[in-house]
Image (cartoon, rainbow, N blue to C red; front, side):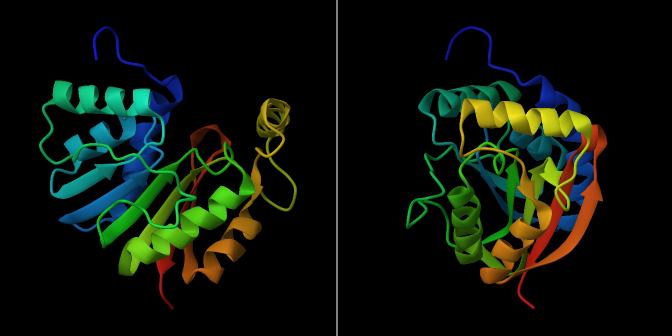
Length: 201
């Protein structure tokens, strides 16, 4: 890929707070699968700061995968595998058999509700016992959210009627159906949440 790499200002703003949570969740050595890696900014930042982890980016969009590869090459990172084409709705994910964690940032609200169920299903299949599913983004709590998040929810629905902020308890219930228990909810800057689920009882 030539030219300037695509950059998300939101990813630049939230990468440090998300890393702070991941540092409390991940082992010193292991492997992490990222779902919907987007521009690759997050995974490159995390991989640089957590070199003992092997990182696997995934992204359904081909140009985004190209950008991820270019960003990894530019950063000289040796602990990030080539990005894989993955749609969470696929019955079989084309990834490794077992990971310590699955991380998904800002996908749940920018996808149909079926994607959340598919994400939890796939994560349950590919996480080792005791592994973690880590979600980041804005959520509704008992139908309520900060005014800016409610405005964001309305704008998402005008773009696609199947998109929108999800109820935290609804996501928790879907995760539970696939064997996850909600371990922790961390309040983040800009009215976002990082939600940590553990696989198993």
